[in-house]
Length: 90
Image 1: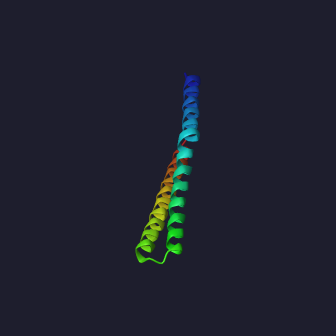
Image 2: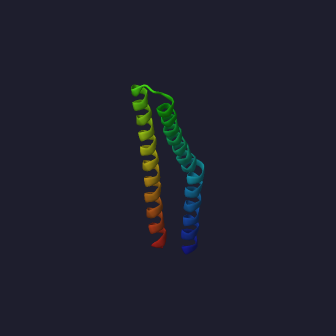
Image 3: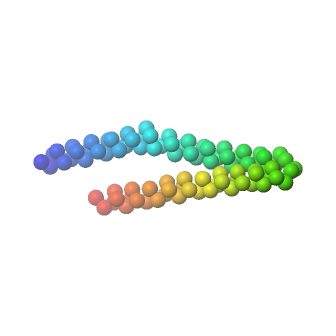
């Protein structure tokens, strides 16, 4: 029975790693890229215009780009900490 438990755990780990590699990682990089594009778009708008309304729009884009990056990296860090904690308990 112990052999099947090990095989079952191995199968679950394989499936989990494939899901992370194929689905989660590309989504993470897509969100990071979108946040960076939003930030730099806001920076260009802020620097390229002299109108106060457009400068405010640029500031808003930069702010939300940074908020997005902060949220992405914070979640990434929490997931890493939880994963390391769970793995160290084995």
